Amino acid sequence: MSSILIAILSLSSLGIVAAIILYLVAQKFKVLENPIIHDVEDALPAANCGGCGYPGCRNFAEACVNSDSLDDLYCPVGGQETMDIVANLLGKKAKQTDPRVAVIRCSGSFENRPRTNHYDGASSCAVASALYVGDTDCPVGCLGMDDCVEVCEFEAIYMNDKTGLPVVIDEKCTACGACVEACPRDIIELRKQNKKDRQIFVSCINTEKGGIAKKYCSVTCIGCTKCFRVCEFEAITMGNNLAFIDSDMCTLCRRCVTECPTNAILEINFPLLNKTSEKVNTDIKK
Image (spheres, rainbow, N blue to C red):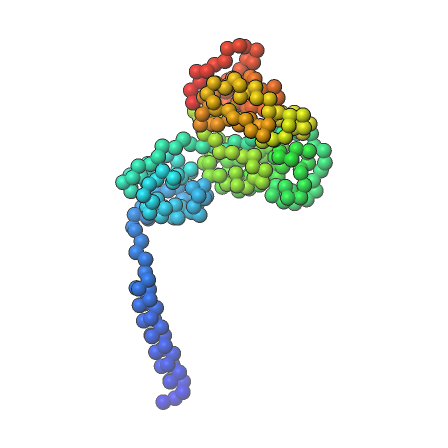
């Protein structure tokens, strides 16, 4: 028998033995997957954005199937309707969760926050924040280099050339949280989305004392507590010279808006309010 034939037979035998071993090992350690996982995955929006806290829709579907409760599981892109479908597939109950939308907690536009220097480096908020304070003296304001725009898969954010600030398109925002993670200054927050997209929030995160903060930006929160004192619904808290409005507790009465001396509290998508009037409309529905 020639050496070539011996080599061929030897290799063939080794291949057959290896195949048998691999088959036996695969049978021994194979994992049987619940077929309902595929059904749940099909019900999800397939955005794979990570807004649910999992790397992708497949992982989220597995978590839903393997979890005893859906209380801590929520798909921000699909919203309550999708979670109700998932719950129906699994015979579980979906927790009722209010939809969220991203808001920009900075009003440091070109007009309100004068530029004191010029940054000539990589056009990245992450890079710029690691190198210097920014092209204004505000150490916490928006850097305006559109990192949040770049990571948004839904084209829900764009940069306003007139203000130098990002703008969220509420109708497109899925509250996936990608922009929140991308912002090195933590000025983007996911807040409860009210009817008619109405929002009231403190558009500032500066915790320095009023006099110092005022030098940085004309519409900064100075921690005067006026808004805190007039809120009858305990929706406003004070901490580190900064007011914060809880979107889940806020009734959108707008009393805090009229009290703020620096216009740091924004009211979005509301009809014009006469600040000289003593009566404030408290009947606006959420």
